[in-house]
Image (cartoon, rainbow, N blue to C red; front, side):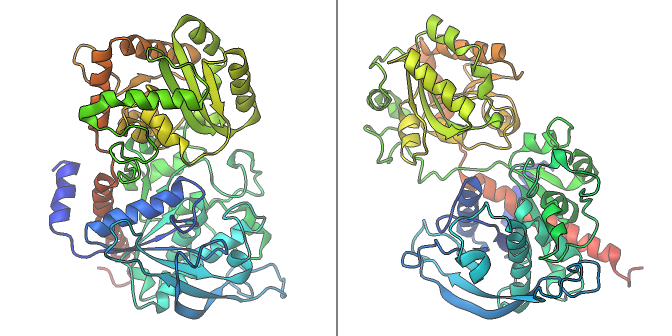
Length: 530
């Protein structure tokens, strides 16, 4: 039976699996990036399918309690720190550190009549490590904060009236949870039955260090117990490795990325471990919120439209040109960039070819984003040298992506690697055509246009080099000049379904897979087997 049929068969016979997502951020309460959005959209999509899905995150001081009123779920949870124990994960004789940290759990209960409301969300409350912090990330004691979240969630589940079948941990920050569950809590009559899914959004981030520059003395093989919260060794713990090693199932954010991370090129020194666990590694694409990104209803567009009225984008293109100081020219091929400016995103490829492209082709560039200085300086210089042809907004802006997707002819995504990427989903939803490198989630979602079959949703290049990028941009430009062909490509892109509904169905199946592995492993390790 093919995978799609297995998913559909499971959905017809679902049996009320209960799922808890644990993460350091969750929209709409607190969000720093894509993880926070996933923790809102995926549980909500599963909830709409009828699943009892909940989320747990820290109760930061910046959460708006007027907008999101919380009620007390449980008071006085004593979370063990590992200090004062004799099991090898103590605090190196430092008797001043506490044996427990006391936490409370708050609960947000959404209005069930609101289809846009998040899932039920629990918040782990601790004054020192969460409530007094203005940011989610970036503190010297982040390792303690994430160990506390991981262990605090498990301690709460020991006393909670609601008990999940599956816990979903996300990235290195909650890799500790998978570790604790398989070691410290493996004999707990309640927790020992729970399966874990470990979600990898970006393998490059593994802890409070660069994994490529770790000495032999500091190397964490993931086999030892998690040290005490106050043990300096905790700072060297590789949460990503431990999540992969101890989870029942590992999921990544695209099928291609799931394959890529098993190679030395993309594996970030964890490819060997991932190959060992390859039977438990899955790739499921992230989706986008089709309510937030909808050209028919988007309030930030001058002219709303759908796949049948795609010609109405003309007014939005003029608006985009005006906002970025570009010449109003319907025939100019308006290419956008909307991104963080980091090495991962591949903009180094533009350094040697952008002048040639701007001189030889009727191209305009609208550039939105911020990041590393070398890219900021490059784009600023282009704007100065090509007034009316290049426009920039080098700062974060929540509104401009809608304006860009609604008006740009194409969007440039030349990533060195891309676990999933949501930008191409959003752009295609609006009929802005991706020019993208064939890697990770981009390879799974952007189909190279073929003039022979008139199929395809973008222009794809394989090799990470400037010449390949230039060829892809030139191909796109030549097809853009034929308005009939270009509208066909736009329609191909706009009818694709990258909503969370499809992803949620695959995750629902993955939860049963995780429970199956858990049951098998428990039976295998039982002293009463045979």
